[in-house]
Image (cartoon, rainbow, N blue to C red; front, side, top):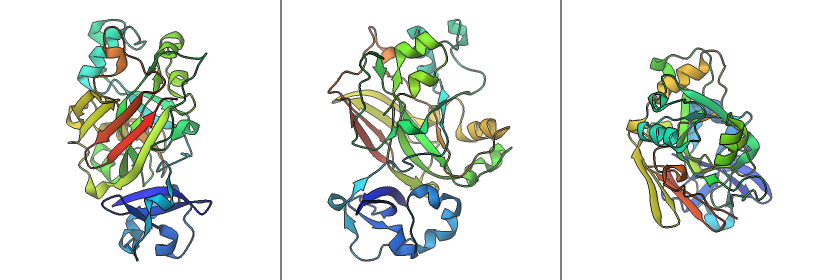
Length: 293
């Protein structure tokens, strides 16, 4: 099942998306009550899924605007650094890695967790703003994002997947010069428009997150091509780690890390410029595409 947050008749609404992605049905019409966004129903999604059946022809995509599935997360997006083996090595070699002092430290021994502010989330098709005067080293990172449906603290690996309601695509846009300058990654990851997300949320029952092809193109050039089975720390490990002392809440978003092929992995680095278009495809989740302006 695909779900979206849309803008229709001047209001945001949660919506069911047709399997072919060509039309939507506002959930308020299916449930008989206002549902302003997906965050409003994630905690009860399992209970109401049987009621989310298409009724009538639906609204064509031309009649609505698709927002990010969780357009303004209530809390920071939690992210994972250096979570694919080859990317960990390319990042350490790049000179931008403040978390490793030598090549021997390239592969982390525990998940590296950082966050992005929720206000940097933008939708599929929205522009990534080039931060002139702030950074000139913009990079892309294709990532599988998971959304928490059932909250909890001290979640075990064995129970972790039962807390995930669905998956989406995230572009963890990064200002590499700020990442190197400030050592901590928060500023470099949180500039306005630096978290494209979408196009929709695909429910967990339709996704095998441990075996998904992840691809990223800059313009028409394939830059990243990997599979989530190459994650260093899998999703259960990430959820167990984060929830050990932090209570996860419905609507929390976790970006699971990016594979090799980012701009800093090239010699010389190949950073994004105005006019570039970044397109990310994750198997079963669709395509997320944004231009730099």
